[in-house]
Length: 169
Image (cartoon, rainbow, N blue to C red; front, side, top):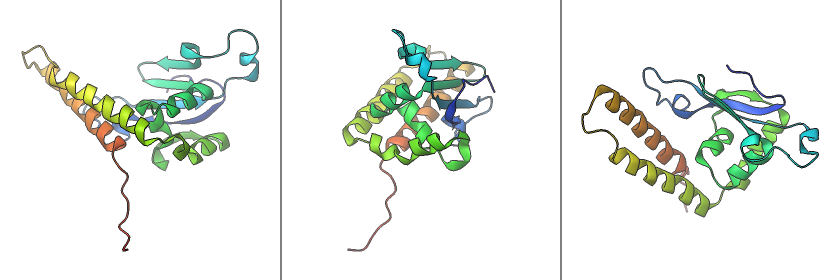
């Protein structure tokens, strides 16, 4: 795995691998949250925006500073909220502060934001999928279309209502 920032609070395997949707040749995506040192917030240029995220490719690894992660979760960013809802076995780093983040994950929920974020994103992804391709149906286009469809299925699954056990009246 690529080098992690210092003070990682929570990190795990996300994306198609996490949901059993990976195909041949799929990579393993990782996502995490870190705490920037207090001194990084002194002065006029605290870690915000792009400076609060580290991204590497090959392998795909993204880490967000804790404040940015919280802001993205409040907006129900599907990619970022995925981290705090992973099944236990997919976490690679889980500190006490990471546990606290998981324990308050329901505080980030808002029916309107979930609908806007997940359904809105799923609809936009479906439109992209619908218009995808160069008309040649080449093997490469079919492979990317299948991956795109798996991604869309994961979004619909994640944004759907949770399974609620039936309780007699």
